[in-house]
Length: 279
Figure 1 (spheres, helix red, strand yellow):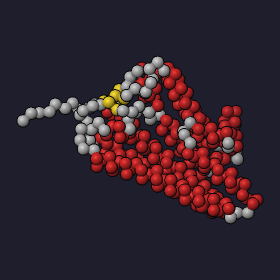
Figure 2 (figure 1 turned 30 degrees about the vertical axis):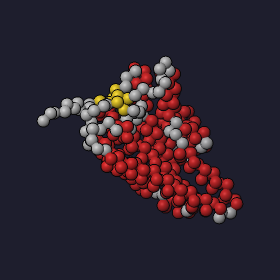
Figure 3 (figure 1 turned 45 degrees about the horizontal axis):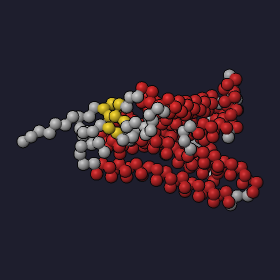
Figure 4 (figure 1 turned 180 degrees about the vertical axis):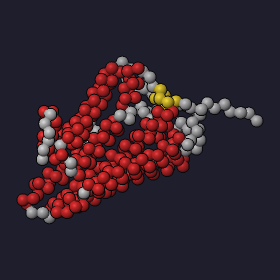
């Protein structure tokens, strides 16, 4: 009986970015600029909200969580991609690959759930304004935020565990620029049908559920707005429109919430001048 010689994979190799030959410096500078804008913008938002007691409200509490998520999410693959471009190194360890997959789905699903929570927060603010402070108290907001993080942790743990219970003993070349589940699973030397099916179902469940809940909140908000008296209509519309910015990329989040929000801009000015904010 012959023995098949399999080498256990200890690292993975990313394929180069298509047509990157001769463009590494341009791509490096471009991605670095986007990355720094994301970090700086979200750190400013985070600092302004913490420094100004006037912004310690449910809306800005969730926005603070969103800023932290944007910083983390943009840091999953960008630093490694910048390293690959600068040093022309395409190797990542098995542990590093596991970390990328875990944090990609952990932070990604947390952000998706947080968008849903923010949509529900706006629904309560618009449709139940008199009971808003009672419903969205500090304890409820903390439970909602903690729930998004904890739920996403278990979600990501399941996906990562399913991915790396497979044996990897063949090719280690990932057909992508970072470790994503399906490009990695394709390299497993075992039947992946069941795991791919479970993973696809698990991944699809989170965004679909979030989308339906956000859609339901929009429908209720629109219905409530259309049934309001005209003096309140413009103010409510302005409040409802703010949530549209919640579906943009991490780099645009700081710009939207600072350039279009008087409270945050005022807090940033006070922070820059070293003044103690007062409500």
